[in-house]
Image: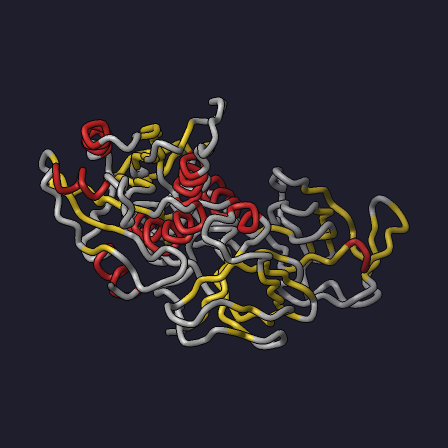
Length: 414
């Protein structure tokens, strides 16, 4: 049995970076950049007013000074003449500061007895209320670096420099195969002992969240020939994820299919709870090396394994330098109890309050309790020897919601 850290090292030892592709800016949300984006221009393009007010010469704009208003600069307009001594020019937020002016007096700091005259009520200093050319982004500067993910603010920055498309890493296509005679597709009529396929939709959603493209391979029954055929189809993608059939049951045929195909697994079984019966191998196929994640059939185990192992693989393929879920510390609001033994990843509901982060344990830690997991949004990382963490203690917690990246190394406390 291998440790979680050693399993991660084996999985991420040789991850190929995906190919590049051009993506329209309006479709780039959540995509990882393949190359640095360099600004072709300054932001702002010129000195701009940061406020509605009056562009002035600071030497003239002392408290009580009366200045002659000689024009107006609207946002998006350029003054037709400079500001001279004893003059002021009305200016809107974002308007380009006219030549001759070196400060903007906010409209709240003047009186305007007539349209042609303004009286300063607060002495100005050079640079007041002016956004300098290039102070946000200078021409030639890197706006977003390779490996960063496009989010709304980065999309705004790309649009501000005129970017209509960006070079991104192509998302990996990942086959998802559920297995087992008892597993039925959604909408099918269930017989006693059968259940609907929850792993397929859950893992497809997790793949999309991590940045991949899931391909539904359906359900393989407990039949060796059919399972071999399904796995062979799955190897045509960038990675294959299967659920079930990797434990020690009499009908667990996925490992038999692996042997039938001549595939050597890198490891089988990880020292963790839930998710111990994880199998992983890198399969040579048509000149490529395809990773195969053999996840357990229990739905909680499958998702926990995916978050710890498959998601970092996807993020690494995308070139993300921060492929791991970050960890935080939270205070328990109830006792957290589980058997001593393997390192544990226990489900909790994480709440952020003005007093700090609090964690509420799930109603059950059963590896088959997908309903209880749906009520949680984080995993408490508990070392193996610990069987009980009392209420009020602080624990290391791995959030499961939000962006799938954020750390350069896993934050396990063991």
